[in-house]
Structures are given as C-alpha cells and as structure tokens.
Amino acid sequence: ASSYGLPIMASQVKFAVIGDAFVDISVGPLDVLPSPGADIEVETVSQGPGGSALNTAWHLAAQGVPATLHAAVGQDRMAQVLTAALKNESKVTDPAKSLAVLKYQATATCVAMHGPRVDRTFVSTYGAAKTATLNQLLPGGNADALDATHVHIGGFYVCRGVHGGLAACVKRLKSRGIKVSMDPNFDATGE
Image 1: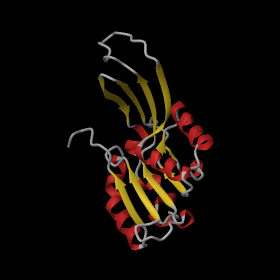
Image 2 (image 1 turned 120 degrees about the vertical axis):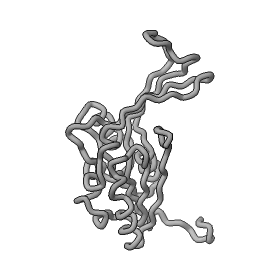
Image 3 (image 1 turned 90 degrees about the vertical axis):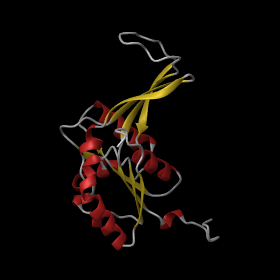
Image 4 (image 1 turned 90 degrees about the horizontal axis):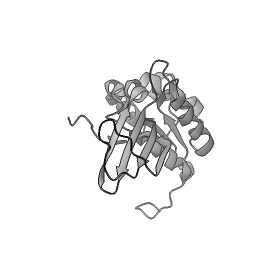
C-alpha cells in the first residue's frame, strides 16, 4: 500500500532506467590484498551483471514492474556476457532494443576484491558507460520517446557522457508529468 493507504498497482507504473551497466567480477574472500607480482588462491571468482542502473531495472522487473534499461555496452566479450544475462536471466523489457552498442568502447567492467579483513577494493573500466551520451541512450535521442511513468537515472558519476544534456532531459520529462529520480552513486574521483 502507498503512504495514503491506497494499493499500488504495478501495472500503472512503467520505469525507464538510464545509466550504467557493468559486468561485475567478484574475487574472494581474501585475507590480504596480494603484493605486486604475487598470486593468491581464492575460494571464488564469479561474474555477473551489475551497475546501479542495471541493478535497479533488474530488481524492478523482478518485482513485476515493467522496466526498460537504457545503458551502453561495447562490442566485446563482456557485452556478450551482459546481454545474455539480461536476455536469459532477467525480466527487463526487451534489452536488445534499449541497449546502445558503442563500437569503439569496452563494456564497463568492475573487479571487486573482498574478504573479512580486507576493505573492498575495486579495479574498473567505465568504457561505454562513461562515454555514452543521452542521444545514444534514449530512443531516437529523444526523451519524448520514452514510454514510462517514472525515469530513474543510475550511476551518474560513471556516466559522464550524459551530464551535458541531463538537465534539459529532466526538465522535459517533468513537463510531461513523468517522475524522475536519481541515484548518483559514488564519485570515485573524490570531487
């Protein structure tokens, strides 16, 4: 129920999620980070879909809320991993139509190392997530083409290519009565 005591009908809500899509590679558990040149055996190395926008779309869709993901991938093996997971494991609406494929960029990938006595440490390439523009992520480059009642922007700091047109896009969406939310995530540059 909503805060007003009225039931929330998932069929009334349609999300378009704009932002980052990553392949996450998780390594651990580690007791210590390896020293340069060392090789440490770990229990598990796994890979899966990730990124703020992708996770949001994935989980909304899993709850029965129609959600499209407007993100970018490269033309590489990691894009194949990511698109296969979206197609075969998620309920995200038709990702083959909503993902932009950038010919000369790598698919965003993050290696996370973790353990009980180790702060999580990340090594990432932002690739296509960093360089894609709103013109590449939106259908026809146009916010008016989004079929949604709510637009969520995820991974803002990673998606630097969308910064230039984002304010105008949000203004246009709000003028159409579309709700807009944003999860800026973390500014890895510390700015």
